[in-house]
Amino acid sequence: MNLLGLSSPAADMELQPGTSLVLFSDGLIERRDRDIESGVDFLRSSLHNAQASPDRLCDLILRTMVGSAGPVTDDVTVLIARIRATSEPR
Image (cartoon, rainbow, N blue to C red):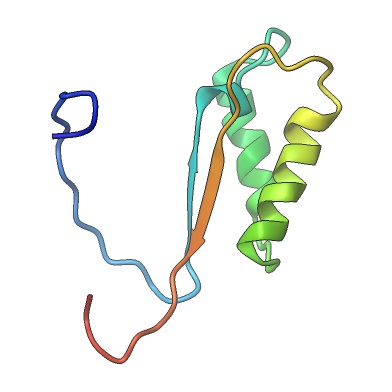
């Protein structure tokens, strides 16, 4: 159960070290002049082969996808976590 009292399905997946997990709101990828699919494609191409730190990637994505779009009319959220190798399963 989440904070809003709504339940959502759980999912398990194995992620390899170095994999980036990117979570974002629709305000990042959807604008009046761009549909969601185009925004996802643009985000995907921005992240392709990106080796910068998660902080720098967030800055780059926000500058690229929001910075030149004019006034922001929706909430924009992006969170990037990079998976690291550990000595024990977590």
